[in-house]
Length: 252
Image 1 (spheres, rainbow, N blue to C red):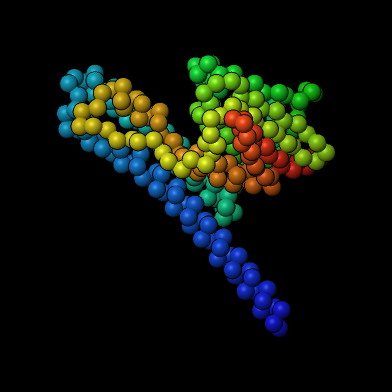
Image 2 (spheres, helix red, strand yellow):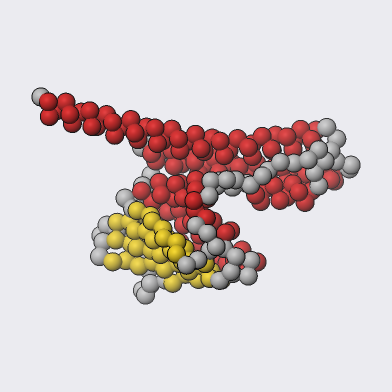
């Protein structure tokens, strides 16, 4: 009886600890969403109170406000998707798909962004026509896009290189980049404050700056990959950031 009671107490302690961790995580999500939401509302209020000098300028400001709202909605959708996964409420769209095609799409999507920062983005695709895996394609795409795009944002020079392969019943991958710090530890978000009469350029910069902190995005990536039964780790040494991960691959 005492052994059963001890096991129950242990399970309760683990459940309580997990609940506290989840509360902190989603509290951080809410905190990081509140600032951009407040700023967008403030911008719309400025537009309503004759910020613009002409109808054309007003349309331009409204368009940028809408773009910022869409960016915020994307962050909210990502947080909601992860929360549903955590509590088993997500309707998984599990299917067979080609990982090489997915990575090729991401390479095409992000190559120009890398070139605009004088960086190189390279992806080493494994030998073979296809690499079929089973799972939710959208969630895995969100994972790799968040991981690579955040790395691109923080890199100042060099090459961002992704390699991946299939070993026995696992998919393994490695993302390497040159970084001045372990940026994934950073918990701060950009200052989104606007003045009384912001310029259109300042509003455009606001829309581009709407992001979760790197530390929160790292947690989101870990949770997305955990949905696949996978793990994600990183090592920072000598200005080299190396992110490695793996997830199981069932036989077709």
